[in-house]
Length: 215
Image (cartoon, rainbow, N blue to C red):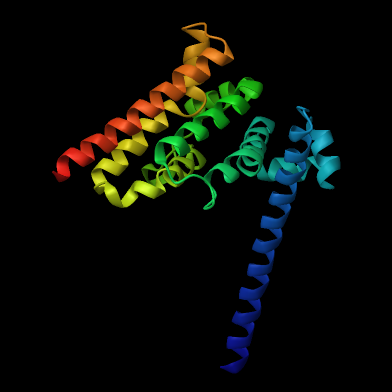
């Protein structure tokens, strides 16, 4: 009995160790790609493999396409360098300011790597639907928006909060940038002006509605 327990424990520890190693390898690939992207490069698989000290085959084991890896790394770099400071606890507690700064940060960074945004949308459209009806992508975007709105979460009902998050998810990200550039032919400055105007209006309207409800 004791021998069986020890065997199971050893097998569990071994499986846990393999999972941890896979996680470290995946993160090492992303980190290496982030460094190259942050330096202004659009690296090849060979360059990423050399930087991460892994084989090309290993990279493809974790990321079916280079585009997916570049997108993940680009968004990770954006989170660390730009978004995290905006949403830090010591930052502004005004939700309008927080959301506006978030929109500006995403706009300014995304315009530099628009080709990745277009690739991400293509991968989403052409890719298989996720299991259990989950989102195809965008988890970072939703997390950012929810963090930006954290100071007023208790002021809104659950339905109001979720509606506001959904509305802002339409205004922050690749899609509105592409629409305004391709359909409205706006430059980066004009796009920034339109989207910050829009997110500010949406947040202010949601807060005004909530205030009216409480009267």
